[in-house]
Image 1: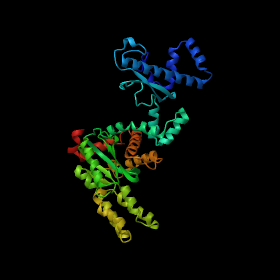
Image 2: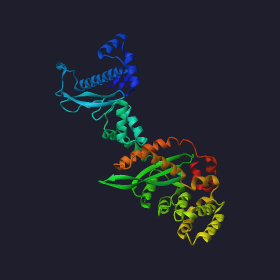
Image 3: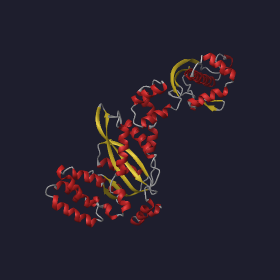
Image 4: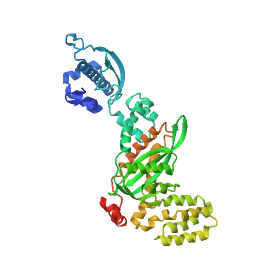
Length: 426
């Protein structure tokens, strides 16, 4: 119904609408249009095109109702139905030409569903895409409404903006539930915290994220999960979700030091090598060291984690304990208690070590998420937080199109370390 002369008018941009109307009107018709609308400048042209666009849609709606009823208005001779016209209702519509009002015809039976502008449709333009784009960049619904008013003269309420962005939720859920690859050589796991309104209260919630490096050496965010606080129990749900979506094996997982995290991974993927983030561990250790000793302590601690192999690292750790153990027992105790997971990267060559010894990939991703969400101190719901993170993630991952550096060497080494597990997928 919205096709006119073979062109889908609803999908035209402002420039295309101008071209469309100018292309189908003769010079005499253009002169008549200038006289009819009193066109004097570019603004008048814009208003005239908006009126013409509105009139075109109005005529399309009337034509749709004619077809629905089976007879034209006042053509009672060809009426073969008990249904009939039943007045009109006003409706404001957004378009690339601005906001305008149409009169949607109704039928007495109430079963007329227009195609050109559906009953619950409020926009016939690409403005929705722009709204979603602005939302993805971290703008609040009120900021977006103000921007639309400034640029297009459109009075769009924050509620309407929210409804427009809600349209991406089905796409986000489809992305969240998409099938995954059977094996990921390396994954990074972490959570970032946000304030969300729930049951009239503002509570802190954790947004769980998993970044996976596939067999081709390309990174991707495997999913986002919203839960209360960060717990090993919830990470278990996340890992089970990955498994249910097709992941059969993970070779190496780089994680932070959350209690029970390793147990959750091993419960789902028992053969995965676990590497605790060294950067997180260093920060945690230095937090127990007084400021006056911090520089010297950090320098000697570096000899541990930058050692050429595990044996040398243990020797350096013993030296550190001899010098600082009595004064900073708590700081060094964690290294001993978690050594198996802190030292996992020593078994691999430098190319792999550089990737897994820290969750830098995840830290970088989190920084970009915070940059986008910093203007929103409190999210009104889980869905609001999820769609913000999804849109930001879609924007961030567009740049992740290249393989990790030296991936061909890394894959060759992994195929030796994990021969039986990785080779079937090569």
